[in-house]
Length: 241
Length: 325
Image (cartoon, rainbow over all chains, first blue to last red; front, side, top):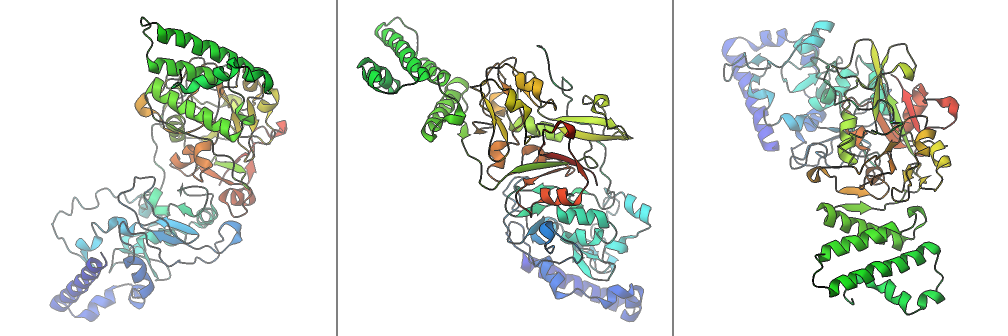
């Protein structure tokens, strides 16, 4: 998988170089980009985090400390990522990890159909020309509320990464770093244990879902549903049937 | 007779050793009546006209042994293993399901606590669905341990709450509050039981020995949270839906005329797993953990959130807190 990823990255770079070289001077192209993105190329740590999770492998990824957040017991908040084991069922789809808090990996989940299969470099390259079908499930409710555009969160030159306000890159697994830039109380509660669905058990390693595992980032509100059937007796049955 | 494993005690009783052994009343009754049962069967075995099969005979004997057994709470480890072996065999013979019944005890240094986020719960009732499947609840009477109450914003009165809502949720201007057994630290249900069939375990879970329960339902009257359910008929669960992972004090097959209730999924939580309701909740409204572990999530919630207990003034000390964001 690593090899495929490296190849994809190499292909992506080559395509970007070709595109810029063929049509216009590269200086103009670079000038179009937001300054922060140009100033902060993909650092090795982010690249490592992005590359080291393979589907099925039980990998741990270097923790990204989030300052000011305190986990349970006022301990420093540390996060580890864990890749999905495809042979396991939904509720047990995560392996074992060795750091205090674990998240499920989205990067590993999308590796079957990477963003780079259409988005090459800064320009969207239509591989199969079916733009109407692409992302037709995305309802940009949250961007409409906040005035955000795609590049507010997604890195324009590598859509498989997220861009933080600081210009730093984050992988799709690190959605909590992006969301926490605005949603402070939720982030605090999530780090402490009052927000977010917990997986595995109450004992041992704490495994929680990250923001984008439950909330659609483009339409984050919990959607209405029809509930499971109602009880036949409201409180308790005090006499026979 | 000699190949019949159950023939041992009647033989001993017939050679008089029972007179020299210390035998309690229940044990003596068991031996004598067990002798009668086996004796009748011996007669049946002699008569070729009897239509009783070996399996039917085994079921009868196992059921009889079950009938005269003691209270689980005071059983020795050996006796517990025996009754579990009998129950597993009975499930196989009578229902054709292979079940594993645990007798896992409480872990030392563990006291279970639960917190429920009333701002997060949206009334989807996925917890109820998971609970029914996990705990082998009666499909016929549609027993449900959990109730999700729909309450109008600003009204903190459970009398005006509706648990039977059936519309798309969350409804505008309402919040949702789930109740189940709160595993009180001062449980009124345990105090009123006239036969000691219900008690509190060291990890805080109030359990019931379904076979010791006489079905008087005093505990149901005593519980201020409507947490207990009574089996008016023998619970019915389709064979293919039976959860084979069972605990003697939890989700094993119940009988007609006994009381049951939520045990925080004792068969899961004593193995470090989450209760089925907490695992099923799609909104993360349910927080479960060890109250004695200062690093646990439940302790973080208690320390950092505004929490309340239901009917706190009754001093039942539920180990179940409500909180909001």
